[in-house]
Length: 213
Image (cartoon, rainbow, N blue to C red; front, side, top):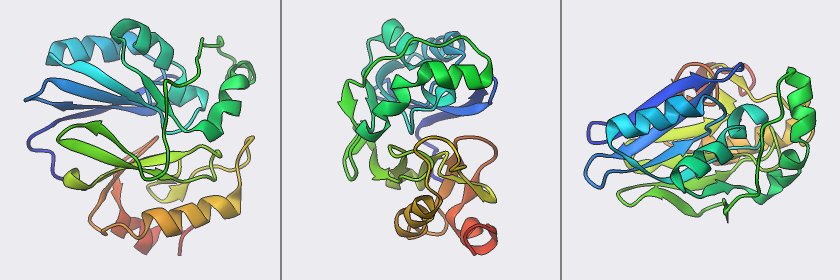
């Protein structure tokens, strides 16, 4: 992973320890935040400490632990929220999602822009290609930062595992197709940053992931 010229910080937020990522350009002083599920005061404070202006809020999928704090962050920064349209039904059932976890229902909103397969998002000098990878949810996306040799995988691919498919919108056959056709074709040394848990690589998952062998 080539990150010597960028700000790249990932830390777990919320009760489910979702990996939230700040990616910033120290030259332009712009940043994106991926999956601000909770702990928005911490995320906002860190952006200010780094002297970064938030350009986009990118959501890999609309489960509460990934999207729950997006509107708060938008209200603090003015940055637009980007989400795939196939996960709009997940936003509509946020109260049910909150009930499953026994937490208060966060206020959410429809996205300002739709994340479509193949589009480029992110920072001017560090753009990501959107990979639509349905299966965990119908609107799940991964973000491939080719210049950084980095894949932000949401809950589609984990170190040694794959995303669960037993929740509304999940499909087991579909997630395997998404992983094989969209992710495992990437260079093997691509660093994978999952939605939860430790980093891995495409090569490591091709070799050792029991769900993919």
